[in-house]
Amino acid sequence: MDYSTLAAQLFLTGIFLSSLYILVTFGLTMIFGVMEIVNFAHAAFAVLGGYACLMAVTSLAIDPFLALLPVVVFMSLVGWLTFDFFARYTLDLGDSHVVIYYALLLIISNILALIYGLDYKFIPSTLGYTQLQLGAVKYPLIKALVALLSLASVAGLSLYLKFSVTGKRIRAVSQSKESAEIMGIDSLKIRRITWVIGIASAGLMGALVGLVNPFSPYAGTTYLIVAFSVAILGGMGSLFGTIVAGFIVGMAESLFSLILPSQISPVIAFVLIIVVLMIKPEGLFSRA
Amino acid sequence: MLETRNLSVGYGNLQVVHEVSLSIGEGQIVALVGGNGAGKTTTLRAISGLLPPWEGEVLLGGQPIQNLKTPQIVSLGLAYVPERKSVFPKMTVMENLELALNSEEAKQKRLETIAEVFELFPRISSTAKQKQLAGTLSGGEQRMLVIARALMSRPRFILLDEPSLGLAPRLVTDLFKAIQKIHAGGVPILLVEQNVTLALQIADRAYVLEQGHIVLEGTGEELCEMPHIREAYLGI
Image (cartoon, rainbow over all chains, first blue to last red; front, side, top):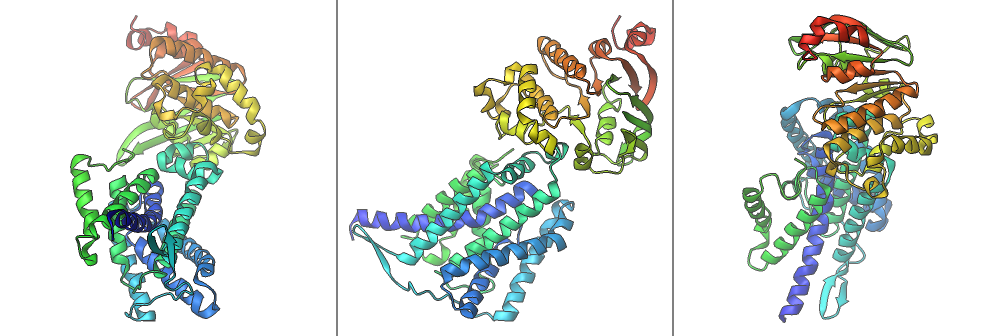
């Protein structure tokens, strides 16, 4: 294989990884920016989304890509319920909320383990191993679709935040909660919708990952660590930072997969973070 | 129009405001003056619902509001302009203004209000300025934007917290002219100020707050004549 083909492969893999990392971190950083909550359970919701997709595919016998829609609806409902019965009561706890959200992570993972067992599951797809031919490069079609959907979701969410009234209110609350209250913006409603969007997007990412990688109830841990890495690198609360950091981490991981065994490739994310935080401790684009 | 009765407020265990009773009538500008740490901002925060009162009542148009949350109080027509920079820094001037449209009336009168606001504050009205991110505006422009934003909700009452703080004297004069124009439009204003001279010049009535207690009350002119005021606040 010559170098340009190799480079193209690495680039495509990088885009694929980046798209998923950005999608999962988007919700995490939004929740932090608006609610000042560090959602340790975020990746557990992603894994939940994977299982939800599996259930939708097996019980409704539909194509997994079509199943994404009921998965998003389901995860939005999960978000709504977890906000009204749980998250809203954690908003004034200060730093100690971190422990509670870690407990939530364990609870969700263990419930999934009880129901589904520890075996790795895979969401079957009719696309199987079809390859796309892009010039001299071959790339699995399913990965390309997953990456496209991830990027499209992130783009859609970004547009929503930039141009819709609620989106602007969400941004306003994250920039100055008190000023938003002074202007009559109901910050509880805004935090609820932010949480729901965060959980639904996490679930979507989990479902998309499930189409490509086998997953188990505790698979969330790796994604949790990468999501936090991306969020910290980009600056917690900065959506633009998440996008840039997501690409950096995804591309770096793809590059280093040449020389590192795949089990430890997430290490790249950590090394990057250490380097960046030593130079700029608040992350690349943080809101001070 | 706005009244407080024996309002007491504090932070944690520290009481900052002691049984303060104020009254602002229809169409009046009333000044609340005092030195640093006198409790002026605390009083405004209690009126606007950002701080829960320890004791006492706050009445807006006769209706008790001391137990309401800030968005509810705002929806009743109270606008609070805080002393700190409270623009949304990463949103444009226009986006900041439009976020204040929180009632049907405000939304319908949007264009009219924007025209009024741009006439009051021409410095932030150019097309270029409208698209500028609020965090990049100068201190004076941000102060104008915060006042303009409060006006967008077509308030029935305005709380102004130290509008002159940190501004160059020339800007302060312009700002106070704008405040007088707003007042001329009929909206009652409770003005908190450390710049006692200016405050007494434009106010119909004033209260003097020292260490959380109201020590003097009267019209702007009456207070200007009082020796205590002249020595302690006007430097005469």
